[in-house]
Image 1 (tube, rainbow, N blue to C red):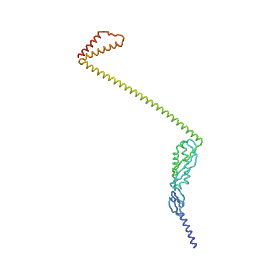
Image 2: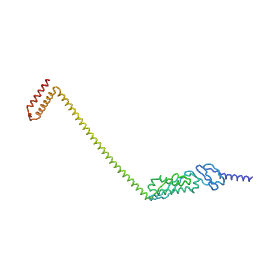
Image 3: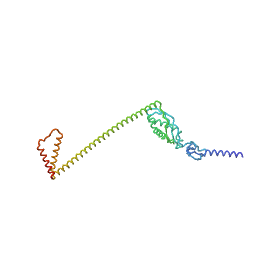
Image 4: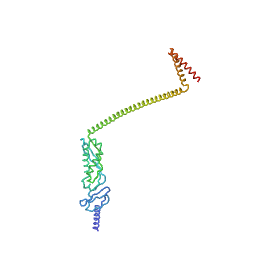
Length: 307
Protein backbone atom coordinates (compact mmCIF):
# COMPACT_ATOMS: atom_id res chain seq x y z
CA UNK A 1 0.00 0.00 0.00
CA UNK A 2 2.88 2.31 0.76
CA UNK A 3 4.48 1.63 -2.58
CA UNK A 4 1.22 2.46 -4.39
CA UNK A 5 0.94 5.78 -2.56
CA UNK A 6 4.51 6.59 -3.40
CA UNK A 7 3.92 5.86 -7.08
CA UNK A 8 0.80 8.01 -7.09
CA UNK A 9 2.70 10.90 -5.62
CA UNK A 10 5.44 10.51 -8.19
CA UNK A 11 2.87 10.34 -10.96
CA UNK A 12 1.13 13.50 -9.74
CA UNK A 13 4.41 15.40 -9.48
CA UNK A 14 5.38 14.22 -12.94
CA UNK A 15 2.03 15.35 -14.35
CA UNK A 16 2.40 18.75 -12.69
CA UNK A 17 5.83 19.14 -14.20
CA UNK A 18 4.54 18.11 -17.61
CA UNK A 19 1.60 20.48 -17.30
CA UNK A 20 3.88 23.31 -16.21
CA UNK A 21 6.12 22.77 -19.21
CA UNK A 22 3.35 22.25 -21.75
CA UNK A 23 0.71 24.81 -20.73
CA UNK A 24 1.66 28.46 -21.17
CA UNK A 25 -0.42 31.61 -20.77
CA UNK A 26 0.91 34.60 -22.70
CA UNK A 27 -0.02 38.01 -21.21
CA UNK A 28 -1.55 40.81 -23.26
CA UNK A 29 0.89 42.85 -25.42
CA UNK A 30 3.53 40.14 -25.21
CA UNK A 31 4.79 37.43 -27.55
CA UNK A 32 6.89 34.32 -26.86
CA UNK A 33 9.29 32.71 -29.33
CA UNK A 34 9.12 28.88 -29.27
CA UNK A 35 12.05 26.75 -30.44
CA UNK A 36 11.76 23.05 -31.14
CA UNK A 37 15.00 21.18 -30.81
CA UNK A 38 16.93 24.42 -31.04
CA UNK A 39 15.16 25.71 -34.16
CA UNK A 40 12.50 28.42 -34.46
CA UNK A 41 9.06 26.85 -34.33
CA UNK A 42 6.42 29.52 -33.85
CA UNK A 43 5.45 32.76 -32.13
CA UNK A 44 2.92 32.63 -29.31
CA UNK A 45 0.59 35.61 -29.01
CA UNK A 46 -1.52 36.54 -25.98
CA UNK A 47 -3.63 33.64 -24.67
CA UNK A 48 -3.37 29.97 -23.58
CA UNK A 49 -1.02 27.61 -25.46
CA UNK A 50 0.10 23.97 -25.18
CA UNK A 51 3.71 22.96 -25.84
CA UNK A 52 5.16 19.56 -26.59
CA UNK A 53 7.13 18.48 -23.55
CA UNK A 54 10.93 18.14 -23.90
CA UNK A 55 10.72 19.27 -27.55
CA UNK A 56 9.34 22.84 -27.40
CA UNK A 57 11.12 25.53 -25.43
CA UNK A 58 10.29 29.17 -24.74
CA UNK A 59 13.39 30.93 -25.95
CA UNK A 60 12.51 34.66 -26.06
CA UNK A 61 9.90 36.85 -24.43
CA UNK A 62 9.17 40.09 -26.30
CA UNK A 63 7.05 43.07 -25.21
CA UNK A 64 4.97 44.76 -27.88
CA UNK A 65 4.57 47.94 -25.85
CA UNK A 66 6.22 51.18 -26.86
CA UNK A 67 9.68 51.23 -25.32
CA UNK A 68 11.69 54.32 -24.42
CA UNK A 69 15.29 54.63 -23.33
CA UNK A 70 17.86 57.39 -23.01
CA UNK A 71 20.58 57.85 -25.60
CA UNK A 72 23.68 58.79 -23.55
CA UNK A 73 25.48 62.10 -23.96
CA UNK A 74 28.02 62.32 -26.71
CA UNK A 75 30.28 64.95 -28.25
CA UNK A 76 29.37 66.21 -31.72
CA UNK A 77 31.08 68.73 -33.98
CA UNK A 78 29.00 71.09 -36.09
CA UNK A 79 29.69 72.22 -39.63
CA UNK A 80 31.36 75.39 -38.34
CA UNK A 81 33.67 73.34 -36.03
CA UNK A 82 31.89 73.93 -32.72
CA UNK A 83 31.87 71.07 -30.22
CA UNK A 84 28.53 70.21 -28.62
CA UNK A 85 27.41 67.71 -26.01
CA UNK A 86 24.01 66.23 -26.86
CA UNK A 87 21.80 63.55 -25.36
CA UNK A 88 18.36 62.38 -26.34
CA UNK A 89 15.48 59.97 -25.88
CA UNK A 90 14.57 57.22 -28.36
CA UNK A 91 11.06 55.73 -28.68
CA UNK A 92 10.61 52.42 -30.48
CA UNK A 93 8.27 49.44 -30.66
CA UNK A 94 8.65 45.79 -31.64
CA UNK A 95 6.48 44.90 -34.60
CA UNK A 96 8.02 41.50 -35.44
CA UNK A 97 9.12 39.35 -32.51
CA UNK A 98 10.97 36.83 -34.69
CA UNK A 99 13.15 39.46 -36.36
CA UNK A 100 13.83 41.21 -33.07
CA UNK A 101 14.99 37.88 -31.61
CA UNK A 102 17.05 36.60 -34.53
CA UNK A 103 17.81 39.70 -36.57
CA UNK A 104 20.12 41.31 -34.03
CA UNK A 105 21.64 40.21 -30.75
CA UNK A 106 20.33 43.24 -28.75
CA UNK A 107 18.04 45.57 -30.66
CA UNK A 108 18.05 48.21 -27.90
CA UNK A 109 21.82 48.41 -27.85
CA UNK A 110 21.94 48.47 -31.66
CA UNK A 111 19.26 51.18 -31.89
CA UNK A 112 20.96 53.33 -29.26
CA UNK A 113 24.33 53.19 -30.99
CA UNK A 114 22.80 53.77 -34.41
CA UNK A 115 20.96 56.83 -33.04
CA UNK A 116 24.26 58.21 -31.71
CA UNK A 117 26.13 57.76 -34.98
CA UNK A 118 23.22 59.18 -37.00
CA UNK A 119 23.05 62.19 -34.67
CA UNK A 120 26.76 62.90 -35.13
CA UNK A 121 26.34 62.69 -38.89
CA UNK A 122 23.37 65.08 -38.93
CA UNK A 123 25.05 67.58 -36.56
CA UNK A 124 28.13 67.58 -38.79
CA UNK A 125 26.00 68.96 -41.64
CA UNK A 126 24.53 71.85 -39.60
CA UNK A 127 25.85 75.15 -38.35
CA UNK A 128 25.66 75.90 -34.65
CA UNK A 129 22.67 78.22 -34.98
CA UNK A 130 20.71 75.64 -36.97
CA UNK A 131 21.06 73.00 -34.23
CA UNK A 132 19.02 75.22 -31.90
CA UNK A 133 16.58 76.51 -34.52
CA UNK A 134 15.84 73.23 -36.31
CA UNK A 135 15.44 70.65 -33.57
CA UNK A 136 12.39 69.19 -35.29
CA UNK A 137 14.37 68.64 -38.50
CA UNK A 138 17.22 67.14 -36.48
CA UNK A 139 14.87 64.70 -34.74
CA UNK A 140 13.23 63.65 -38.00
CA UNK A 141 16.55 62.93 -39.68
CA UNK A 142 17.71 60.74 -36.79
CA UNK A 143 14.41 58.83 -36.81
CA UNK A 144 14.64 58.30 -40.56
CA UNK A 145 18.21 56.97 -40.37
CA UNK A 146 17.57 54.59 -37.46
CA UNK A 147 14.20 53.38 -38.76
CA UNK A 148 15.66 52.43 -42.14
CA UNK A 149 18.19 50.08 -40.52
CA UNK A 150 15.82 48.86 -37.80
CA UNK A 151 13.39 47.34 -40.31
CA UNK A 152 15.66 44.26 -40.45
CA UNK A 153 15.44 44.00 -36.66
CA UNK A 154 11.64 43.87 -36.54
CA UNK A 155 11.27 47.17 -34.71
CA UNK A 156 9.72 50.52 -35.59
CA UNK A 157 11.39 53.75 -34.50
CA UNK A 158 8.57 56.07 -33.50
CA UNK A 159 10.42 59.27 -32.63
CA UNK A 160 13.62 60.75 -31.28
CA UNK A 161 13.82 63.82 -29.07
CA UNK A 162 16.92 65.85 -28.26
CA UNK A 163 17.01 66.50 -24.51
CA UNK A 164 19.88 68.91 -23.94
CA UNK A 165 22.43 70.68 -26.10
CA UNK A 166 25.44 71.89 -24.14
CA UNK A 167 28.16 74.20 -25.40
CA UNK A 168 31.25 75.63 -23.75
CA UNK A 169 30.95 78.91 -21.79
CA UNK A 170 33.06 80.78 -24.36
CA UNK A 171 30.74 79.72 -27.17
CA UNK A 172 27.71 80.61 -25.06
CA UNK A 173 29.08 84.12 -24.40
CA UNK A 174 29.82 84.57 -28.11
CA UNK A 175 26.28 83.48 -28.97
CA UNK A 176 24.81 85.92 -26.45
CA UNK A 177 26.86 88.77 -27.93
CA UNK A 178 25.76 87.75 -31.41
CA UNK A 179 22.11 87.72 -30.35
CA UNK A 180 22.50 91.13 -28.68
CA UNK A 181 24.07 92.56 -31.83
CA UNK A 182 21.31 91.03 -33.92
CA UNK A 183 18.63 92.56 -31.70
CA UNK A 184 20.34 95.96 -31.84
CA UNK A 185 20.53 95.66 -35.60
CA UNK A 186 16.83 94.85 -35.89
CA UNK A 187 15.97 97.73 -33.55
CA UNK A 188 18.06 100.18 -35.62
CA UNK A 189 16.46 98.93 -38.83
CA UNK A 190 12.99 99.25 -37.34
CA UNK A 191 13.72 102.78 -36.12
CA UNK A 192 15.12 103.93 -39.46
CA UNK A 193 12.21 102.31 -41.25
CA UNK A 194 9.83 104.19 -38.98
CA UNK A 195 11.56 107.51 -39.68
CA UNK A 196 11.53 106.78 -43.39
CA UNK A 197 7.82 105.99 -43.33
CA UNK A 198 7.16 109.12 -41.29
CA UNK A 199 8.95 111.30 -43.85
CA UNK A 200 7.13 109.61 -46.69
CA UNK A 201 3.80 110.18 -44.98
CA UNK A 202 4.64 113.83 -44.30
CA UNK A 203 5.72 114.41 -47.92
CA UNK A 204 2.61 112.64 -49.15
CA UNK A 205 0.47 114.85 -46.94
CA UNK A 206 2.19 118.02 -48.21
CA UNK A 207 1.70 116.86 -51.77
CA UNK A 208 -1.99 116.17 -51.26
CA UNK A 209 -2.38 119.51 -49.44
CA UNK A 210 -0.76 121.38 -52.36
CA UNK A 211 -2.92 119.56 -54.88
CA UNK A 212 -6.09 120.28 -52.95
CA UNK A 213 -5.09 123.94 -52.48
CA UNK A 214 -4.36 124.41 -56.18
CA UNK A 215 -7.59 122.63 -57.07
CA UNK A 216 -9.46 125.00 -54.77
CA UNK A 217 -7.77 128.07 -56.24
CA UNK A 218 -8.45 126.81 -59.73
CA UNK A 219 -12.11 126.25 -58.92
CA UNK A 220 -12.30 129.71 -57.33
CA UNK A 221 -10.88 131.34 -60.48
CA UNK A 222 -13.26 129.33 -62.64
CA UNK A 223 -16.20 130.40 -60.50
CA UNK A 224 -15.13 134.07 -60.66
CA UNK A 225 -14.63 133.87 -64.43
CA UNK A 226 -18.01 132.21 -64.88
CA UNK A 227 -19.57 134.88 -62.66
CA UNK A 228 -17.92 137.71 -64.62
CA UNK A 229 -18.93 136.12 -67.89
CA UNK A 230 -22.49 135.76 -66.67
CA UNK A 231 -22.46 139.40 -65.53
CA UNK A 232 -21.13 140.60 -68.90
CA UNK A 233 -23.68 138.52 -70.72
CA UNK A 234 -26.51 139.84 -68.59
CA UNK A 235 -25.35 143.45 -69.12
CA UNK A 236 -24.99 142.84 -72.84
CA UNK A 237 -28.42 141.27 -72.99
CA UNK A 238 -29.87 144.20 -71.02
CA UNK A 239 -28.08 146.74 -73.25
CA UNK A 240 -29.18 144.92 -76.35
CA UNK A 241 -32.73 144.81 -75.11
CA UNK A 242 -32.62 148.52 -74.23
CA UNK A 243 -31.23 149.40 -77.65
CA UNK A 244 -33.91 147.30 -79.28
CA UNK A 245 -36.58 149.10 -77.28
CA UNK A 246 -35.05 152.51 -78.10
CA UNK A 247 -34.99 151.55 -81.77
CA UNK A 248 -38.61 150.47 -81.60
CA UNK A 249 -39.52 153.71 -79.82
CA UNK A 250 -37.70 155.82 -82.43
CA UNK A 251 -39.61 154.15 -85.19
CA UNK A 252 -42.87 154.97 -83.53
CA UNK A 253 -44.68 158.28 -83.98
CA UNK A 254 -43.03 161.05 -81.89
CA UNK A 255 -40.03 158.84 -81.16
CA UNK A 256 -37.49 161.15 -82.74
CA UNK A 257 -38.90 164.19 -80.93
CA UNK A 258 -38.72 162.40 -77.60
CA UNK A 259 -35.12 161.45 -78.31
CA UNK A 260 -34.22 165.06 -79.13
CA UNK A 261 -35.85 166.16 -75.90
CA UNK A 262 -33.84 163.68 -73.83
CA UNK A 263 -30.61 164.81 -75.48
CA UNK A 264 -31.41 168.47 -74.74
CA UNK A 265 -32.33 167.73 -71.16
CA UNK A 266 -29.13 165.82 -70.63
CA UNK A 267 -27.06 168.54 -72.19
CA UNK A 268 -28.61 171.23 -70.02
CA UNK A 269 -28.33 169.08 -66.87
CA UNK A 270 -24.68 168.39 -67.33
CA UNK A 271 -23.94 171.97 -68.22
CA UNK A 272 -25.66 173.08 -65.02
CA UNK A 273 -23.69 170.57 -62.96
CA UNK A 274 -20.47 171.96 -64.32
CA UNK A 275 -21.53 175.47 -63.35
CA UNK A 276 -22.36 174.40 -59.76
CA UNK A 277 -19.22 172.39 -59.11
CA UNK A 278 -16.71 174.91 -60.50
CA UNK A 279 -15.98 178.57 -59.62
CA UNK A 280 -15.06 179.18 -63.18
CA UNK A 281 -17.86 180.10 -65.49
CA UNK A 282 -17.84 177.85 -68.46
CA UNK A 283 -19.30 179.34 -71.59
CA UNK A 284 -19.76 177.23 -74.67
CA UNK A 285 -17.73 178.23 -77.68
CA UNK A 286 -20.89 178.64 -79.62
CA UNK A 287 -23.52 180.31 -77.47
CA UNK A 288 -25.95 180.15 -80.31
CA UNK A 289 -25.75 176.44 -80.23
CA UNK A 290 -26.83 176.47 -76.59
CA UNK A 291 -29.73 178.76 -77.24
CA UNK A 292 -30.66 176.78 -80.25
CA UNK A 293 -30.41 173.63 -78.17
CA UNK A 294 -32.68 175.13 -75.51
CA UNK A 295 -35.03 176.42 -78.14
CA UNK A 296 -35.10 173.02 -79.73
CA UNK A 297 -35.73 171.43 -76.37
CA UNK A 298 -38.53 173.80 -75.59
CA UNK A 299 -39.98 173.31 -79.00
CA UNK A 300 -39.88 169.61 -78.51
CA UNK A 301 -41.50 169.95 -75.09
CA UNK A 302 -44.26 172.05 -76.55
CA UNK A 303 -44.78 169.56 -79.31
CA UNK A 304 -44.76 166.72 -76.81
CA UNK A 305 -47.31 168.47 -74.66
CA UNK A 306 -49.55 169.04 -77.64
CA UNK A 307 -49.29 165.52 -78.69
